[in-house]
Length: 285
Image (cartoon, rainbow, N blue to C red; front, side):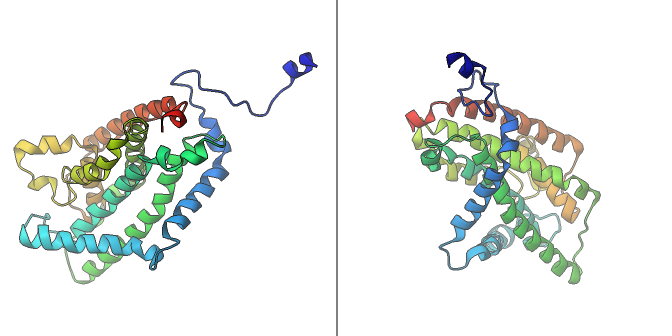
């Protein structure tokens, strides 16, 4: 009997990771149905008990754009590179919202799903990946709002134009997703032991927004601070995003390449730290 058990082939063997680099990406593909289920769950559960439901996809960026236009455009009179204030701010808000949503929701994935992680096996990366994918729905709706706004201002005769940078649009979306995912994986691993950091996430992300070109163009930044702002990988992405849709922004392959390198490095370390923490997080959370 013992000899037969030793020679038996199993379809699935569940065991602890032997090293930091032991990440089975094949499991992610085999559990793709579970990924889609989590995506549907995230979308339905978030808006199930709301009065306006998915309309919040439109309401949030519209109100934020109105506030930014009044405060930064009219009161502070910050340059928008000659673009209509509402259109300038909406491009920054649309791209920033997707990145920040991926980051903030991934950063609490261990805490929010401890009951599921402790009961059943599945590749743990499925959960944060489902957050990134489900946020694409919200990003797509806000992108539609941006396109409608562009049509309105084009009808009014405002000067802006779509550029060749639109070819890089899928790359920009992937970079925003992976950057938010990588930082979120690092934060969620750290907060399993230091839960106080959870309270700083929302504030920190909001503060980080002012270090990018969401509310001002890079061309309007003082020379002594411009290089510091460019160190933020989201700066190159937002500038490229704005250049692609509106024809204004300091877009270059160097800036996008820098953002891509930083994103991949952060994602690499994020997966390693997440992989290490998932082994024993249930004992510490």
